[in-house]
Image (cartoon, rainbow, N blue to C red; front, side, top):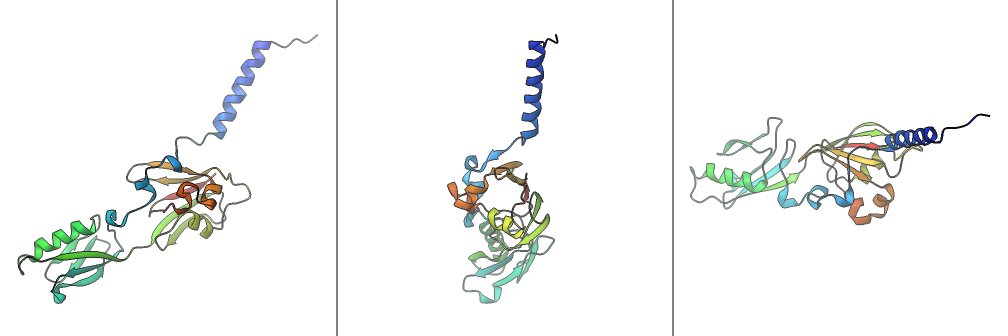
Length: 203
């Protein structure tokens, strides 16, 4: 009569459990609900100018010095009297202060404001179980839910709880979402805004 070694069976079961757990693992990630608010929304006052943005520079009581323009691929914008100014990577208030410093050579106590007329399009990459994979160019602001819709939605094989946004800045994160939470805007998930360079992966 064939006898089964109990310890052997337990070892095999443990190994299978470990393998199954490994297959189901999504690696390191943070759920959207645990994400700092600063990374889910971009406050206007905290906006960082980037290449492709169109800005409006107004100099108080100096219409001839005021101008608007698009930030070029070299990160610069050309302004009257102030000349070529590096704008990309700076906050609007930072840029305004720099322009004021340059204009002091020509006028007394210049007062400058910088506003964003139009933000550059957002480029995101869609991967995994979505209707259409690849790069998407979207007009900001754009939410994760809107990007998923643009990509044709989830495929029939998608895991509704395995939606990830891979973000490299300000630090590398894999942010996990539940599709139902996006649809119902649970905890504000439906308003999560994507940033240029984000990669969306649907398991």
